[in-house]
Image (tube, rainbow, N blue to C red; front, top):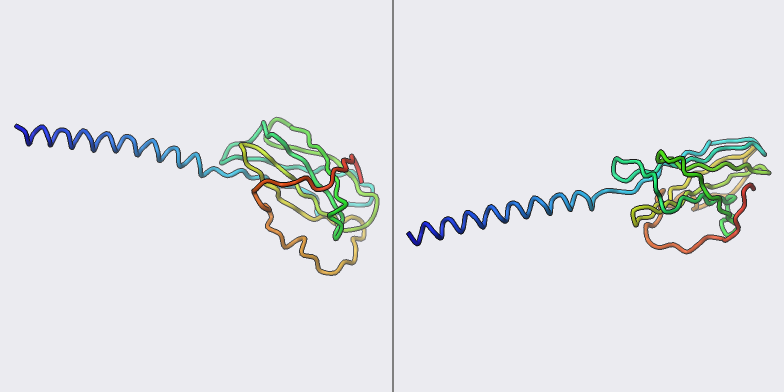
Length: 163
């Protein structure tokens, strides 16, 4: 009789542990979701041509329609210290857009800073304006597309609608 009671207690304990481990698996799946931003910038544009910058933001496989911040940072090749930022428009479908134009030939970098779900991502892409420019090799394109996911200071506080 005593051995039956011990056996029942062991079975009940095993069932309880199995139920608890199932919940932790679901919690781990939530933790594995990644904030991603797909940056869409034309490869080339003419001087003074208005272009649209677009970022499609997802968390896991779901569109993020309520990002905390989506800001575009733009700078000329070799001149990041003179970058400027443009606020985006939330299209409420997971895309965040902004328009801009460039007033001279050159190679420019566009980096979108996205903060959502307590995460930050910042993919970057280059655009050639007009005839482009003749620059020596730069490490600016060697950076990881998503950059560092930690806390970031602001890069230049100059906010311009157009450059």
